[in-house]
Image 1 (cartoon, chains in turn yellow, brown, green, orange):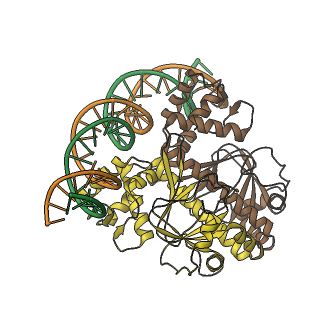
Image 2 (cartoon, helix red, strand yellow; image 1 turned 90 degrees about the vertical axis):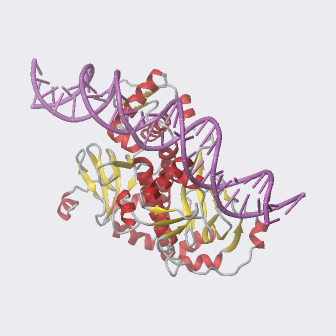
Image 3 (cartoon, chains in turn green, brown, red, cyan; image 1 turned 45 degrees about the vertical axis):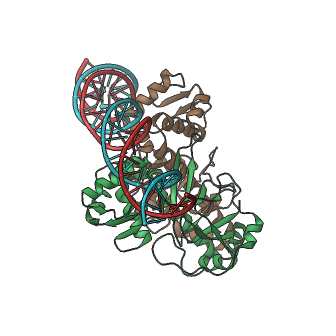
Length: 230
Length: 230
DNA sequence: CGACGACTTGACGTGTTTCAAACGAGGTGG
DNA sequence: CCACCTCGTTTGAAACACGTCAAGTCGTCG
C-alpha cells in the first residue's frame, strides 16, 4: 500500500484546521510542520491505509472522514482499538512496523507524512519532540480507558460510554451522526452486532436516546448516560 | 503520597541493571540518567505509590518487586492496566495528573525521578527525548494488545496469554513464580477470581500446565498455550 | 492448635452470544 | 414508477460461558 506513485499523484492543497476536542495537535509546531511536509491523499470507504506488520514509514492525520485501527485474531475476530476523526493523528508506532491495521471507514482525506521527516524535525526541535511524546501519551490514556471499558463494563455501560465519547468528539449539540457501522461499534466495544443493536433499542425505550435513523443518534438524557458511564 | 520528606529520607545507592525483555530502557542515555538523578525508595506490599488524579510529579522505575497500575469504577470494579516488573519504567503520563493509580504488589524498591528533571534533560538531549517517546509508544502497544485480549478472547485464551507473557517477562525457563494474587490476575484479565482459578485447574487437567503451588506455575505444553494465544 | 487469608470447588443464575429470520432503506433496471 | 435486489440493521429463541453466592480446602503464622 501507499506506493510512491500514489503518493505523488495526490494534490497538495493545505489542511483546514478542524474544530473541537482531544488528540488534536496544538496550534503551532508539529501541526504546522505536518501540513508543510505532508501530502494529502484520498482513501475510499473500506480501503486499507496500512496493514499490521508493514514497515511503518508514515504518520497520518485525518483531514476529513474517519479511520479505524484494529487487530485481528487468526480466526477473524476483530478488535478495533480506536476511531480516528478529523484532526486526529494516528500511526505513531514505536517500532519500525505497524502494530495495527488502519482502514478508512468512509471516503476520507488523510494527510500523510514520512516518519523520517518528522523524527528528523523532532531531533532539531525539542518542542516538536515534546508534542510527539504528548500525543502518544494521549493515545495511551485513551487505550487505558478503553481497557477499563472492555474489562469491566456491561453492554449498557459500554454503549453509554461510546455515545458520550462520540458526542464529544463529533461535537454536534445532542445529535450524533456516526460514520461507522454497527459492526464497527461492536468490534470497538467488544460485543456482537446483535448486542449493540439490542442495547441501543433498549436505551431508546428507556428514553435515554432517540434513533431517528440507524446512523443518527439523539442524546435525549445525558444525565442517564453519564450515570452509566461512572 | 510521596511527601518531600519521604523522598529525602530515601537512600541513594544505585540501581543495578536488571536482566531481560521488553519495556526496558536501552543501555545508555535515559537509563543511566534516571539512575543518576533519581532516588531509591522502598514500598511495602499493597502500599500506594501514587493515586489517580494526583499531580504527576515523578517517573518511576522498578528495581525490585512488582507494581500494578489500575483504574477503579465508582462501585469498586477494578481494571489492572499493567504489571510492572524489575527494569520497567512506569508513570509516563501525558497530562499533569496521573491517569491511573499504582501500588506495590510485593515489597518493592522503586527508583523515583522528578519529571521536571527528565523533561529538562529531554529538552537538551534529543536522544533522551526519543527514548521517552519510544517507551511510551511501547506502553501503548502493550495496551493495544491488552484491548484485543479483553475484547475478544475467552477465559482460556486470556490465561494462556497471561502465562506466556509472564513467562517471557519473568524469564525463568518454564517455571513462573507469580508475584500477584488470583484477584490481581482476574482484574488484569477482566475475569472473576473464580473463573481464573477454574480455568487454571482446567489447563492443568488438559496437561498444558502444572500447579506445584498456587503462585508457581510450570508451563508443561507451550505449544498448546501458544495455540490458544493465536 | 487455632485463626486468618488465599485459593479452590460446587450449584445455580444470567447477560451475552449464537443461529436464524424478518425488516427497511437505497439503488438498479425494466 | 414500481418491482426487485442488496446490504445493513433489528428482532426472536435457544445455548452457553462466565458471574454470583456459598461452602470447603490449603498453607502460613502467631
